[in-house]
Image 1 (cartoon, rainbow over the protein chains, first blue to last red):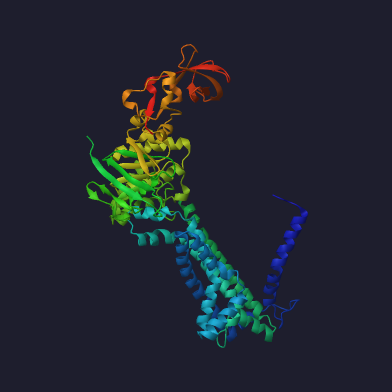
Image 2 (cartoon, rainbow over the protein chains, first blue to last red):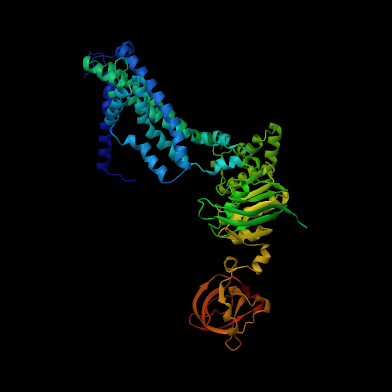
Length: 264
Length: 337
């Protein structure tokens, strides 16, 4: 352990830097004042009810949720299939393909959004919803491929072979032996994908359109016209949701071990 | 007495169509015997095992078992038990479910499954661990679970792929006698892959020594130990002194008539005696002395080259000292290659 007063000070400052804005948002969301401001005037839950009264916010939340859910789900399926191919057939080609799969995470989102806008919306004229799903798929795919590939590499190849020697046909061996062992990876890939898609601004910026807005945009719009703590209240709820996700993620990651401890 | 049970004939295997991993491999095994495949890493022993298991396709050749051609029967229909080097226990299943896995594939009734699993766990000495997960077991226990899982399906063949290499030395000795005991109790024909000569010789009925994708010698451990077929095997079983056949005469060693075509003669370090200079067959100088506990190992420089001698002579010879060496002719082995 390295202990020093200076180090402790920096740690405290960093923590403040991270958490102070969050605390401010939480505090102002319960403030009865009409603007996002300090000092507090009184306790109120009105901004929370206001969130649900705003059609723009509720509708865009639904949009974002559905979008993130669909993109993550498709991302997981593609990620799984891609990872299987990449891990089971190692070679120069699969190395190149892996970098290709991971490349969207290296390209600025704003570029991806722009290119997809030109191609999917202007050229192919896809419906906005489909274009958004495809765009977000590009955002989440690197996470899915990376996490599932890593987990698949860790998995002992002989597991599947062992199942086969014990009388299990190949496809069934994959389903009953390999898949259950990939579940934690797939769950965490899903959660990470969901959060990233849900938070995404640059790709959505180009692909959203009339009647199809995402939550981050609706929030920015709202702030532009009403400087009230509704967005604070919404942010608090989003933080709550993310926290819940993180807890679920942690649970699913450690489930195997937890089960093990019970058997002890 | 024993009859041929299974046979690999003229097996060729290559992964890239250029290099043969196995070349024209022929191997037979008898019912109920424990046959070992022994050789350095990369010699093709694990590949041979995987061919038997059906996990590798052969280019040419056939594999028959009990008169049935198994060459193209898929893995899951072969009914062989395979214990992997990594054990390959299913991490998400309990010990019980791991062992019961094969029986479930065979649609055994629940009661039959429970009975068979319990009795196999008892044979393998892991009763009471039913509800544990593989992660919670020690290496030796995992090994036993893997063994039980392979045996509970009453396989026609038991295949063991370096099953002891992940255990510490003490456990390894204990486990190999456990394996031998279970193998004899169940009378199951077993093919055992290892690179450890001592381990292999101690439990095998017969040993097939492999090198570069071929079987160099296949015989009982006793025969191989006394009469290795080639230099590689001789080195493997502890011969350390190899000399061209032409040098035999120079130290008064006579080559038998039928071994006139041999290229080398060799002898174990412990079969060379340190004697006084007058009665010695050859004379040399001690260059290096290593303490082995029971004895000393000397590297002695002679006119034939360096000889490795193991001797418990007391007091030990010193480095630089002149010593006489006597080579017992009955322990000399002549090699054709």
